[in-house]
Image (cartoon, rainbow, N blue to C red; front, side, top):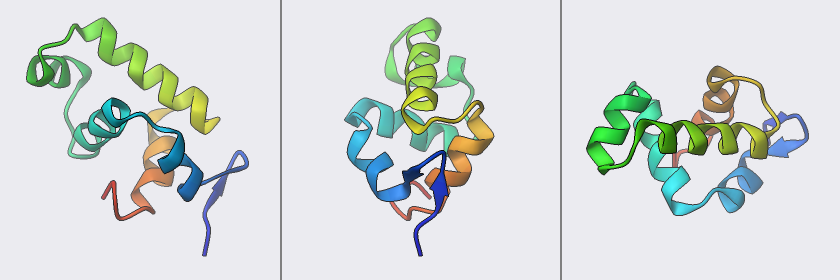
Amino acid sequence: MHIHLAGLTKQNLQMRLTPREELILKYISIGLTSKQIANQLNLSDLTIKTHRRNMLKKAGVKNIASLMSLALSNPKYS
């Protein structure tokens, strides 16, 4: 069964995310904040927020909860 969210399936979400975005998404899925992720990856908080915004745009969703709903249906991100 494919989960559709704004015309995006879990399979093409996976294909469209960069390796860095995938890593950030995994950190989000375990509950880390942007600041905690930035510290973990030695990046700025703004850089993480930019990645989050880009992932939302790619998925066609308006918030992280919707993005996580899509991503968690994919074992790669859960």
